Length: 115
Image 1 (cartoon, rainbow, N blue to C red):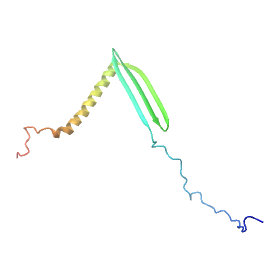
Image 2: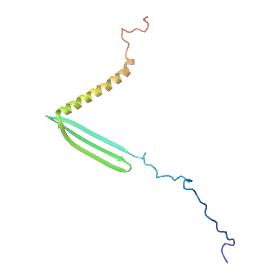
Image 3: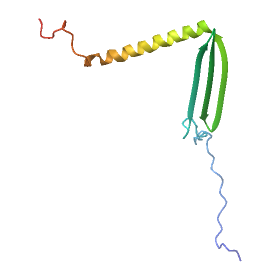
Image 4: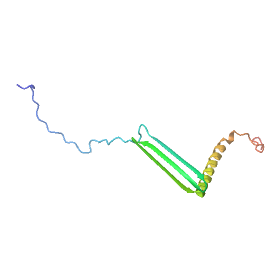
């Protein structure tokens, strides 16, 4: 005697179109839970040469990578770079001061009640 008293009839498998079900791809790791970047650059001048040191470290997608280099360049390149950096800094400070200029007292030359 069988354990199952009722037998079921054999059924044919249903055919499914290939595009009927959307298959999900692997999850993108574009936004990992933890990631960081660290960059350090030092430029110094002594005598006729300028010395450059740089270090970059990053942790992304579970991988820690680190790069470092040192080099020397001509003093004129160092002076040109410092001049450009100072010009950029002064330009940024001018923008900040211009945005805060409305806090300064009004000059005697300008009177809003004058016709």
